[in-house]
Amino acid sequence: MKKAGIIGAGSWGTALATVLAGKGHQVRIFDVDEGHLRRMEAARENTDYLPGVPLNENIQIAWSSEEALKDADVVLFSAPTQHFRSALQAALPYISDDALIVNVAKGIEQGTHLRLSQIAAECLDVDRYVALSGPSHAEEVGRALPTTVAVASANLASAEAIQDLFMTDRFRVYTTEDIVGVELGGALKNVIALGAGISDGLGFGDNAKAALMTRGLAEISRLGVALGAQPETFAGLTGVGDLIVTCTSMHSRNRRCGILMGEGKDPEDAVREIGMVVEGMTTAEAAWELASTAQVEMPITEAIYRITRGTLKAQEAMEMLMGREKKHEQA
Ligand SMILES: NC(=O)c1ccc[n+]([C@@H]2O[C@H](COP(=O)([O-])OP(=O)(O)OC[C@H]3O[C@@H](n4cnc5c(N)ncnc54)[C@H](O)[C@@H]3O)[C@@H](O)[C@H]2O)c1
View 1 (spheres, helix red, strand yellow):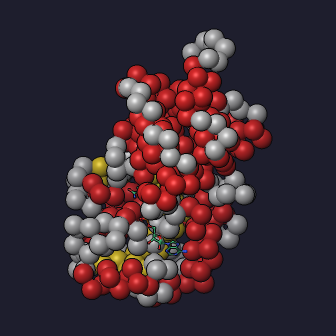
View 2 (cartoon, helix red, strand yellow):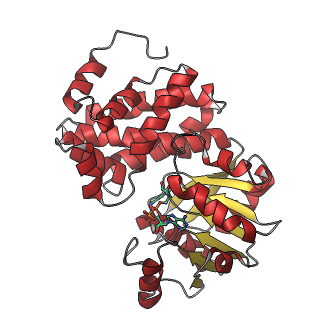
């Protein structure tokens, strides 16, 4: 049995802690929000982010990064994307030389436009770094509903070790070496999910949503390939799989935020009403800037970015997208 230290006791960190603890691994979980940790400890449940899932007895609350990571074989980061750099900096002195590092956040760093493995590569050996992604709502994983994900690493042996660590008869894990494709698919689908929500909020139907998802995936793949990803990855769990789950479910904060914007709420008010991190909002900006630099056409992402900025109305975005010049589907 392994020792896992988890940094970030939100819904996803807690759901993954539950998977590991259920297999008999020893899990220590830390969060910067001490009040949240105290409530978790008192209730032995993550009442703030994952209510209804009791904490397994193999899960211990840690009161510092140091305590969480002492002798850990595996370090798992589950803080939101924009907090990964600071979480990593705080954890770095306590990560042992042979520990594997897993990151489950989905996004691109604002300002630098770096993928999370690129941030990690500034101070860690990339061969020890694994990204975990795929169609996986914490609410369902916490209840042991069947789920599949993929783990990606430049070093296949590291991905396989994480596959073995997590794999159960309810949580199936695939491996891949295409970390660029996995990270971009996971980040960029949140932007399209905002769009799917906006479409629902405007009162459009299934046809419009299917169009956004399909043409959205086409532009995600276009950018991904330009940035070095393998095209097949976008047809897999971390591409179309995650896009489907995010664009069709009310578990998705991005989609729910989009619905509010489609109904006419200001972007800031919509985010405030969701009350949690809506990663698609920051990713929209990063995606649009990455696309501009790489000179890749991403009209849906651009429209969603402009809606989040308040410079384009949702209805106008639809008219703009439907009124584009005719083209070949594969062009
Ligand atoms: N919720 C899901 O179903 C799900 C599924 C797959 C991936 N993800 C990804 O996982 C990441 C986390 O999502 P979540 O839903 O668990 O978020 P959340 O909002 O439920 O929780 C995030 C937690 O991270 C903590 N945190 C913030 N900065 C920290 C730091 N520096 N050190 C330690 N803890 C810190 C916060 O206090 C909070 O408790 C996101 O990138 C998200 O896209 C979430």
